[in-house]
Picture 1 (cartoon, rainbow, N blue to C red):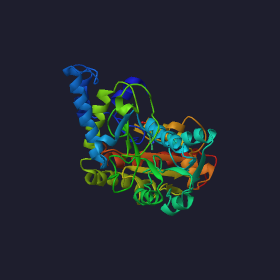
Picture 2 (cartoon, helix red, strand yellow):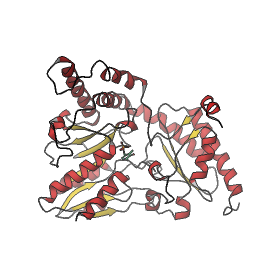
Picture 3 (tube, helix red, strand yellow):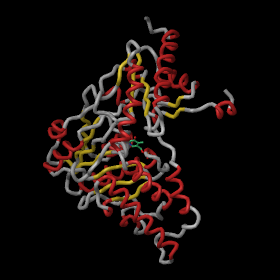
Picture 4 (cartoon, rainbow, N blue to C red):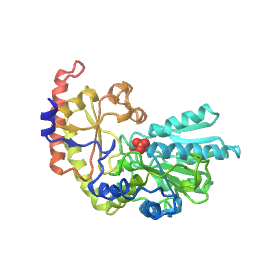
Length: 394
Ligand SMILES: *Cc1c(COP(=O)(O)O)cnc(C)c1O
């Protein structure tokens, strides 16, 4: 298909766990901060002062969305940066007191796993908790792994591949009881599930704007008052001197507006997402030798992840792309490699099956008609590919 025809045919975007477009309302809110309101927020003249209050407003919007206080919100350049800062920042501070043990899970995003590996090279010890076949880790597992020298527990709120939602409140309770700092990568959860950092005993929480219709390259880290961690960037006094550098004012304004919109009516949005998700699940599971990965109920409302025996994820993606459907296999970051997803291996799938995964992730911009279409096309594509597969026998 040439570029021209491609432009004319409608694209169905069902890869919202990878990224989302900036919504028109968010863009509208941001635009003045590129042109009229360009003043440096650290200056005394009015163009700069206006930016200072815009940043303050966004900080409050982010805080309100997760039950925090605005002084506990620090703007960053996204989810990976927030994760790096939380884990390295706390680990290095705690190491000063001789605490050099970290606890996490085997199914974290690479922004956590590779950070943990980097710390291992610096002499930290990391416990990687296994998960069950649905991708769940239990508070009991966390409790059993805590030692006197444990510096930090980091467990993701919801998994980006299989959508499983972890028992964050219960894990937070365990950590608080043992006096251990608790971080959660909530990049996939913000805007999809209700979060309250105080009720859930969360000490640090990472989020990323581009997963909920703010731009790429802006995010935030919630750091509970009293939690100590080393500075991310030394320099000026921005972000209380912990993350220096002239603020990304348009991005910050966009993040504030986007999180307000994304969290304004989560129950209604989740209901709509679940309906679409369940349409695709019902259709896909009508195929023989197909399975739904992740927890059947405790999963992100917009996430469906499947394995179809006998076929490769890449082949499915290409065929679906030809039909105008954007989906994912494994995770976007690893699709260039031939390794099966570490998440699918962690839930116990054998290598050959873990290669055949397909992830569909909806946003509230999708429709039930699109879900029906995707479900039907999955049936069509899997059936076609299996006919051609040397390893598949009916
Ligand atoms: C996307 C994602 C990240 C990385 O966020 P960026 O803003 O792209 O750096 C981290 N963790 C999870 C769970 C994610 O889904």
